[in-house]
Length: 471
Image (cartoon, rainbow, N blue to C red; front, top):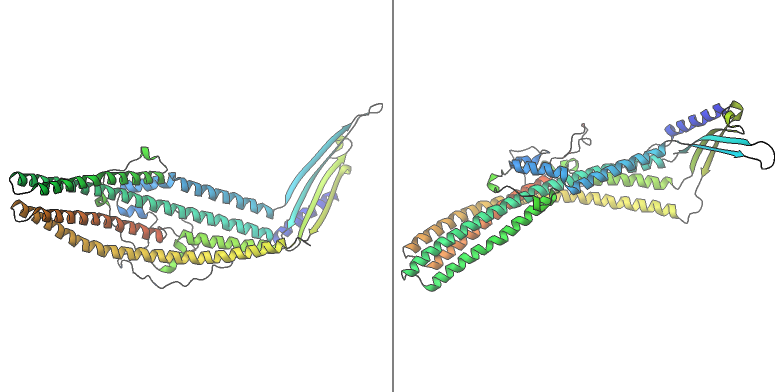
């Protein structure tokens, strides 16, 4: 009879586990009015979205190696992975509440009389199984919240990975640009020294004044003074790149190449609505909203009574060796109900807090979507604007170079004064620097567009496909 009672108890726990209330149904994310297209359309001949290895389209083997190294060694990314593991553990812990718990208790004692009589030994043992009936869905809601938080942490890791990757690419391009600017600066010094020699020849022949000589020496000194600052900027950029790779700056350097080794890729922005499945930060905001939905369900369920079932089977005997004999076996079944009566309004306030938190996350989701749309539009606008600036600046550079060459020739023949040469030299230097800066801005605008489009990542589960590897 005792075996049967315990069996019925365990069976009741199992049945109630399956027939308790349904898991909370998360509400769909709020609707956001999405535009039909972008303010600045992308290239018509490249309809595809960025692929997951988008950085390879810049055509640099060194850059590809650095990105691969950063994805495995970046410290922020390692921290994000640790947060995912924490969330996985929390989800597993939350799932335990849906299962019965079993505990074994045992005790033994020996009584020895002081004066007369024989010693006696008694022992007892019991196995206790308990289960909280999830009648209101509180435990399932807790599990749903933990699972949604896990998803949010996974999406957060993808966001960190995208930020780290785009940071590596952008900083690498900056290092190459500074290398180019150093090359141009040294060319300017060489040009200024060449003009200085012409002035010295003219001054020795009486065709140039001492003032002209002093002016050109000042130009040479000024051109040389730009080089140490550019070298320091290059060191700082390399240090920033080393940090992104999880390395110490003292042990890291980049090959001495320039932006002429970089290919300028074309990027198509696709449709605005597709951002919802291609931006991990948007998916993270959705997951946080789903966790908030589940937390509201938990807070509401806490207002209702909780039901606990317990079943136990054990044995007690004064003779240790006869502990497991049938006459010594005991069993009991019990049920308890606990309902909140007075808590000063704490449970209701917790419910109100959960609802307010959900309302906040609704606005966070909307703001995230709007910010994503704005980032893509801004990047497209920058690309178009920079392309136009570079076209016009290229024409200006060609004219500035011709003006400088002609001024130098005319100065040699005595048809122009030194001030004209200095003016054309300064103009050429300024335009060359501007061109280098525009080239870097154009490449970094492409990186910004890749990042704004989610970097080639997409949520395949949301699209109804099998999960793909996400980098």
